[in-house]
Length: 520
Image 1 (cartoon, rainbow, N blue to C red):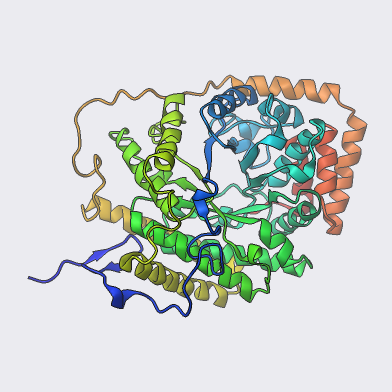
Image 2 (cartoon, rainbow, N blue to C red):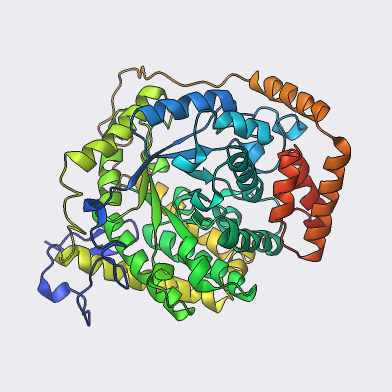
């Protein structure tokens, strides 16, 4: 009888048994905290400090989200992670006609500095690390955050956190872009430059494979496309004359964790090794500028609406993958997220999953516990090789921007997504509770709902804001922003001034729409 062939989701064939002959040849033993960081970015990893336990939250109004943040902090969350609604992500105020039906639905609505004040009421920005999943309007949300920190009397040198700020994956996989690629890249390097001087502890970009994976890519494609995007950002910063050893230290990454435990662990290890070598080739000499530091979120697209409690087990496996793979921070999804935004109960269970892995599983007791495993080391090298081959194709096209403009990355993700779904439908891939082990019992999971009336609440706030501010000062600063953008000068100081004068997110985004146009 012929041997049954088994493959990972990246089409890597898995042998029945691995032994010493499968171990890759490595010239020198790999040491945690040292180049090329395969085994982790810190010598002692979680024995010195656990990963940051974040819970991604944001919905409805700033008032409602603020309540959830205080609840999460009371439950042991170590860092906040803000989800913004769709109008905020694409630069429209809540009272814009295109915002109708979307205000506060997939995240919190933030229209002005006043909303930011409410969002973080009772929270000292000097004392909390904040991650913001925002891209096309990242420069505005960062400016809101900086203006609020200044109002709180905070030392900007101590403010820590991350803006996603990764526009390339928006064109390839997610869609919340505003401006064309080239001016968008210019805004990103403006942020790099400004933060390197004024906000030194801030991670200026979180180069994101998460949404690439959510759109249907394989694990290999996730790291190949993400690291290619990373190279494009580094090259853009170098062309601007920035020091790779300075801005390179503030680059961070954002990856997905899916259910194939060993492929995911190997993916994280391969990505660290690859990025260290890529940065070295691009001229970095500071080891901290070669480190791939990353946040992980468990896989939203792996969660099922059928038998949603099964998702608790999926999230547990994915949490282990992230921790055994050496993540620096982690968000675990609520079991109900295939049905709605997470309820408080689901968010608490998700956080408790991380805490159980941290304090009860033993996974954090030693550094890189799966190092030396015949299987994991072989898989790490095979993922690395396949990802490099894919990156070479992108490099031959002129890099990520060209590959996106030609549709190469989008097409590759679409093909992988189709193939994955085909395997589920024909039974090659089993999803418990979906195409096998189904249940006829009616699901009674409570669903979290957002009231549509919040658009009216936000619109009233905007009307009051516009009535209370100095219109001449707003017009003056927005004209200054237009002039700076047209001249190719750094826009960040002017954007911060604009938000301090109570210009709205939509007004600032529209000012640059007039200068740069919109990407279609």
